[in-house]
Amino acid sequence: MDAESRKQIERAKKLLMNELREGLEPEARISVTLVLYGEKPGASIITDRPSKLEYFCDLTGLEYRKAGENDIGNEYFISCDEEELERVESMGEFLGYPESAVEFFNEYQGNRLNWKYIQFLEELLDDGEIDVEELQYLYLVQYIPELSEENVKEAIELGKEREKSVLQKDSDSGLEIGSQILEEEVYSARNFVTQQKIEMLYIDFIMTYETGELEKYFMKYLPEKIGFEHTYDILMMLTGEKPGSLVMSPDMEQKKALEELCNELDLSYRVTGGRERSLLDKILRRDTRMFKDGFFIARDEKALERLEQSEGRFYGFSDRGVGEFLGYPRESTIYYQESTDPATKASEEKVQELKKDGTLSEEEIELLALISYVPRPEETSVLRAVKIGEMREKKLKELDKDLETGIGQKYIEEMKASDSSLY
Image (cartoon, rainbow, N blue to C red; front, side):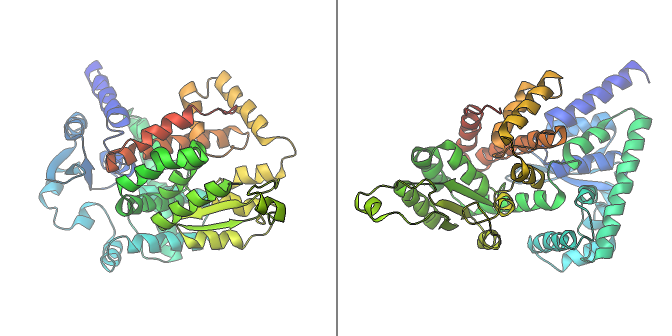
């Protein structure tokens, strides 16, 4: 390979890995890579950085055609073959979807099928028909198969074949674009089902809430009442990053503020777990209980109903039930439940060890302030937590862009500046 070719490759990698990282959604970056490696005939891409995308195509030899504009950005059709661009009549065929999947998709409208698909995958997981590790391969398929165990497993196998092919072509070409996209977007900190639910809930969040009412509560009112960390937790629940949120031991004024929030934003909640205040406390308008109430909040009533099916020591619920409600990884919840030593101390030591050996940078450690839980003190769990922190930081920046507000940046700064020995 001559020097000019190497230079082009490095420029293309920099474009897709860095300059287009904010200009393309994760699924779009995967699509571009699959088209580049000949794994699908074409892709439909929306970007707010059209000149960067066009330059990437020019460098890599991809053909492209501008298909239109909308509020989000410019839409492009991309293919390895110019003839494919000339006959974009059947979008499903152009995108490389099986005819059966196209016909099945046409039976539904909007996100109804997406929700149905996610629910079906959850059932397969619960029944043990598929493993959670296999779900990542659905990122490489990019279509919804007919809802049967056979079709889902077939899609997973196709994803595995594409992964193997991309890695082989990476090795043969020296591009290394495929392996980096797999690492950043496919080998995710969260499985396919979880990530898809979060993305759909975020879309619903943007469609449902207005900037004014969110700024009213999240820029001043709630932080003054319950502090930034509790308020951040509620914001993460609203954006879909967490199934539920918990404010521990709120006083009467805090409860009033939280009830007002829930009533105005149409949120479900439960106040439970603490024993009754004494008559003297009621007379003197105080609360001297050591174990006060827990204020549980969720957008979905079903999340609270699932929580109430568990029984245990934590506000009357099991540690695992509460961990699931708060969106904590099961491995970290189990560690916390079984550990006899302070969980935070062991995790802090692991983080510092990974920093010392160069596995984690200071910037990556700062992202742990955004995760709202203590990761299991193992390298895999800590690195997964960093990835989740990165995703949340990106989601907060998207929030600011989509709602034209400064809420997200405010909470990134506040949480990273929080006083936590782990971070």
